[in-house]
Amino acid sequence: MIRNDFVVTRHVLTDRQLNTAVVAGQTGPGPVGLYIVSVGYFVAGVPGAAAALLAVITPAFLVIPMMRWFGARASSPRVRGAIRGVLLSGAGLLLSASMPLARDAVTGALPVAIVAVSFVVLSFTRVQSVWVMLAAATVGLAAKLIG
Image 1 (tube, rainbow, N blue to C red):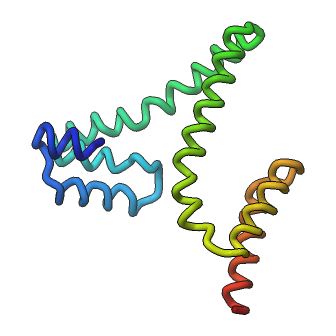
Image 2 (cartoon, helix red, strand yellow):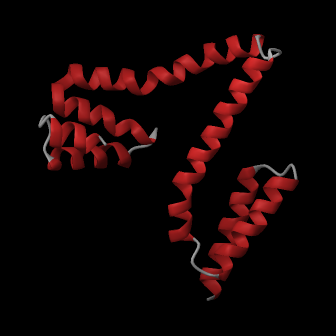
């Protein structure tokens, strides 16, 4: 979508600049969409980078007051329904984005077993996800070292 808007339609970036922006944004720590700041820089210099940074961070700063506002009105059935709808749509988007990744990552019996056990543990116990991830990584590493 970014390529279509900036490279194909508006011609303000080249493919090389877009690739450089994506690599620059993905190599450092931080949000996944941080490459947008590099795109802003390539398009309009420092002011473009500043505008892109504001576009990336503004939603996070708006969520806190929105949650406080919704929290005060959470007893309303309409607000509860809206929150439930947003949660379900977010879960659907996450699921649709993760399925192609899962098809590429879960390729053998051990990964399938790790996914199944992790799902059961996370769904039916109160074990924190960090411990499940560490256990799965340990099992995978042990299998790699043994095999």
